[in-house]
Amino acid sequence: MKISARFTMRFFPIALALIPFAVPTTASAMDLDWSGQFRAEAVMINNYAPEANVTTGQGGYEVNQVGSKDARFQTLFLRLRPKLIVNDNVAIKSEWWLGNPVTGFYGSDYPGSSRSDQRYYNSTFSGGSSISAQRFWAEFLTDLGTFQVGRAPIHWGLGLIHNSGDGVFDRYQSTGDTFRMISKFGNFAVIPAHTKYNYGNAAGGSGYTLSEFSLGLRYENPDEDFEGGVNFVRRIADAQSDSVWINYNGGTAGTPGVGGMNVTIWDIYGKKKVGKFDFGIEAPIFNGDLIGRTYKAFALAVELKYRANDSWNFFAKAGKVPGQPNSPSSNPEKWTMVMFHPNYRLGLLMFNYNFANFAGNNNPNTAGTVKSIYDNPITNARYLMAGATLSADKWKFTGSFITATADRTAETGQLFFNSRDRAYSSVAAVKNQGASIGTEFDLGVALHWDEFTTFALDTGLLVQGDYPKFVNGASDNELKSVLGIQASIGVRF
Image (cartoon, rainbow, N blue to C red; front, side, top):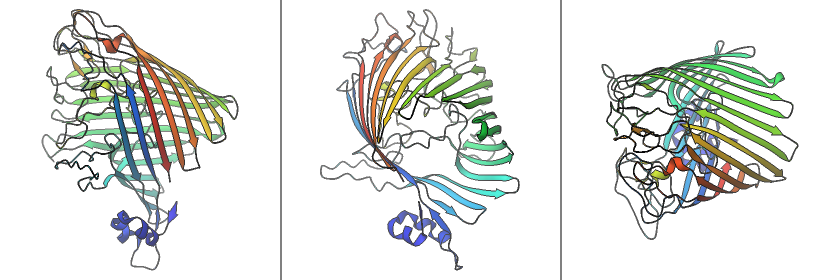
């Protein structure tokens, strides 16, 4: 949607910051393109916690309720994407957030700054919550290719490792301060980049840095409906990095890892259309050192879609994501676990909600204490998802089935890695843990009101298995099936 800078100033006051660029001193005016997304959700989840916990504090998978085993909440989020077109070769792009895609709840202030909470019976105040610029980068078209510099989105393949999270209902994003060149040679594209995610306070010495050096090679052939590539990534963090990848610190849970990260990732993917079939595969391979231990891992995700006709589509997803093996001590010999990007999720409940965080502080007045209810990436799992969609004019009906088992489970006499806490247990397991994570059945209906607006109602029933029931004691928790209902509105403009 394209509008002039003068029209934007009248109807979008937040564009004032860009007015000096949009209206130069010369007679010619630059173009300012606006796009964005708005969403609102109302969610009801029953039986996320057991009636009474068997709490031992020995590293089990307890889910604690606070007053109720049911949850009711509503979320609200808006993002704007102004793009300033300087000339045919230069564009400045950005993304601004109103609210937070993870913790933007109705009736609450937006977390992230230290200020007094405001609770009034007759109004909802945001404490002067400001608009946050999450992304802003420049793109230059040169003879060598497209050069990007700034805080930009990153995406590769199916989105297992780097996922830009550009969908209306996406909650997490891959964003980094980057220098990237995209050079195309026919159907091939060569993409060298340097990206920094976390810098800290020091410019020299212990810089608290987390960086990636990458070189991507991508092949795209629209005539053959094929796309594929390999991304070589060197992910490096120094010994004092405060970036929390896992909840581990040389055997001490609850603090960032000390020991650094020096990991090589070969991220290979392919997408192919053959007749009515769409096929996708991605296989990231990890090798290097993580927090003073050898890190070797391999994960796999496969997607299949069958377009039967204009009305019916069938789809399936399957994958294997390794977990962390048991250890006789809190200092493991090696790391093998992989966590997919949290934006690559399955179903409404499984690998979407972290029920252990439902009782957490989701709207704090102190930074660093937010417990996200959506922090549940696919890890330590073998999963299968199958479903179908029926499209009828403006309506779309979806049904799916998901089942998953754990790759690694607790074993008697060994310390086990808790994938929720991302830390080893403090004491050895007193019994073996079941492998079944659960089975989920989802049904959904969506009304595409027009080309911009979608109303949806989704339901899910999660039958929890023995894996999440595990408590490191004489008896396990008795978890009931979880029922989830979500009503949502999404607007693209």
